[in-house]
Length: 309
Ligand SMILES: CCC/C=C/C(=O)SCCNC(=O)CCNC(=O)[C@H](O)C(C)(C)COP(=O)([O-])OP(=O)([O-])OC[C@H]1O[C@@H](n2cnc3c(N)ncnc32)[C@H](O)[C@@H]1OP(=O)([O-])[O-]
Image (cartoon, rainbow, N blue to C red; front, top):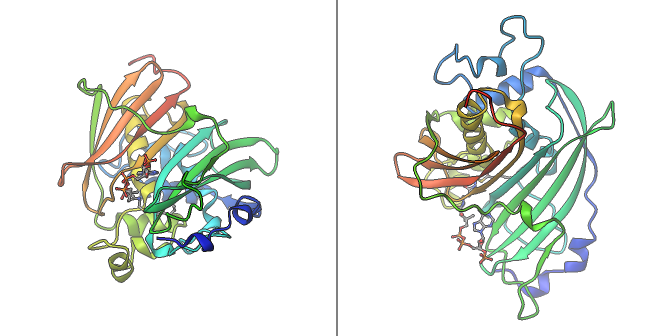
């Protein structure tokens, strides 16, 4: 537990994160799609081939909306996050939540300028929670493309509040909070997908080289029997399942995405994504079949519904 004398709220809240850039090509978008399992069940999948190949005269590959979560990767090159005013052990850091808003379909290649800020910071006693917001602009046009809010869960870093009221700060609307109630009814769609034992080793090629996902010793120190899957890889699997089952394979129908990581996933486990439709909102949860445990839940808001649903 963090010592209250080590926490300096003023220093943390006034910290300015530097702007970052992210340049990608179509090859990066394809490696990402393969990393979240596109065409993993069939190399001629009609809903997914467009994510990895120019089929039928298609000019560009289509890009999954969750690809945008990579834009701010430079912020944590080795898995640690700069939080001046707080001491914490980066080896105990876990990805807690991800919230994404897409304002324009993601191009198949591009150069992105990111504005980064601290959107929230909370003392949860046993943990501290930091929320980092990244607004991503297309460099050439200057247009705002998307916003990502990443929540990091810093195990062991809570308990620093000096007053009896735990320290809590956030600067965004309450309706963007990802907590969802899973309906008691049967899901509208269910999709089962296997992750490969090498899934995290493939996914890391998209730029998240945190050794928690590849190094057995680092995983042990973090409390896991072996390296675990990147949270964003699990989210990528779940959102891809929704795009396949509800958007008829069209990634451009996704407006916003929210997910909370409830439990770690081991590469090689089977993910079952259950989906409920509530107007243009898809409420979902992903379970690991082998352990019968829910590992992720959230919602995806769509621009419209597919006419054939
Ligand atoms: C980031 C880039 C690096 C990437 C790394 C990875 O990919 S790692 C791989 C991917 N990530 C993973 O594998 C992580 C998987 N998730 C886990 O292992 C666990 O959910 C946990 C350890 C994050 C929290 O478990 P626990 O039993 O210690 O928690 P609890 O139930 O006792 O609640 C305590 C308080 O925290 C709140 N809160 C709870 N959960 C979350 C959350 N996810 N998010 C945010 N907040 C959360 C909860 O509301 C409560 O606050 P309240 O209500 O009192 O004000």
